[in-house]
Length: 451
Ligand SMILES: *[C@@H]1O[C@H](CO)[C@@H](O)[C@H](O)[C@H]1NC(C)=O
Ligand SMILES: *[C@@H]1O[C@H](CO)[C@@H](O)[C@H](O)[C@H]1NC(C)=O
Ligand SMILES: *[C@@H]1O[C@H](CO)[C@@H](O)[C@H](O)[C@H]1NC(C)=O
Ligand SMILES: *[C@@H]1O[C@H](CO)[C@@H](O)[C@H](O)[C@H]1NC(C)=O
Image (cartoon, rainbow, N blue to C red):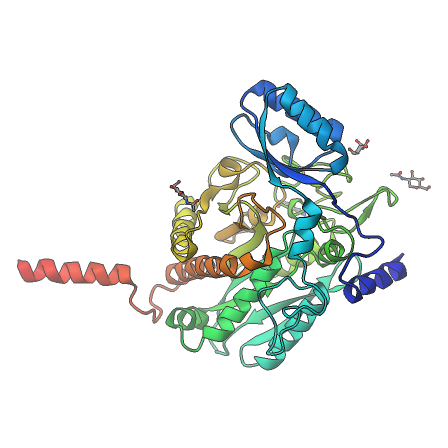
């Protein structure tokens, strides 16, 4: 089993085109459907169950609501039946992706094409398979040893090492920690692309950018570029739209746990499935998965030093705060939202992209066992889930030409949150005067001069 999987992964790397065992999505479509009445909702829930559709938004048939659009991937074989059902019940819909396989093919780097490997170095404008990300991590710490170290976090279910990068300016001062993980869900490829981009941004700019300089005096940044390594590899070799980890359940009859429903934050209580065939299977217990356990053990040990926990997902364009499992607001809700709203404003200034800010259970849907809720529950004050681009036009198949703008705007947003956290926690640090406080001083001065 292990051996054949290893050979298989190797094949996937050597032959990036279509290979025999890879699942294809020829003729599958992604539809946007708008139920208008509770009758529509019931009919849609029934269609989802009988046709085994892949819901992209929301993830659970129970969360379908009148007036809220849903996005579904429909296998080619079920298209006629579904569209027939929608027409019959007068439910309006539009085609978002006309042929999922075609869209996938056009977003995959091709062997030998000019951007697969650029001679001058690593290209941050393409999606990279895991082998290349491992190699990238090694290169990054080798060539930036004054700032970056690489550390072992744990092993995945399929025995692959998980490493994080620690970005830390040498200092004898005790520093606090910003944590960021990417790639907890396999198919959300833009997420690992962002973690890599973000590291590059810090390395390129920390010597000259006063804001980065300032927060690195107080904060170390820990970055886990791919949390769900087994799932990510599987999404490259076998099933592009795979979401979960690759752990085997019920005697190998079904695979994978939704790692973002496996944390010890009101685990298993809401918005999850206990059926291992489900996309949102929460595992057999809190931290039942080695990947979840590795992250949780690590963070728990340092929880009094971690000021900010960021987990990067796609899609939907949200900055989400705790909680997901209940509608109660976090004790520091106002600060959480203030920082996130600043981030959303800065993000929008970059390319005009709209992000929604708010508690997960109120602006998106309820779910339990997320790392964001868990991190806040163990006492980490600033805990957020980012849902990057887009809002459904391409969904999980975001074309590579959107990697750069997505990463640029998200970098701005994440930097804004880190600065907020830094200033909140280290109010007397040598921060460049912000335009806000400058205005305040000018107006004070002006009033004083007039009086
Ligand atoms: C798994 O297989 C064993 C041995 O065949 C059997 O006793 C057990 O009931 C099975 N478990 C499940 C959950 O099917
Ligand atoms: C989960 O959290 C509860 C309550 O905080 C604790 O009692 C339990 O030991 C934790 N479980 C794990 C697996 O860490
Ligand atoms: C789990 O879900 C699968 C697929 O929907 C279904 O066939 C199976 O009966 C379910 N298992 C249980 C124990 O409910
Ligand atoms: C962003 O949201 C505003 C207000 O809801 C809307 O007017 C604007 O068209 C949106 N912009 C984009 C690019 O979607």
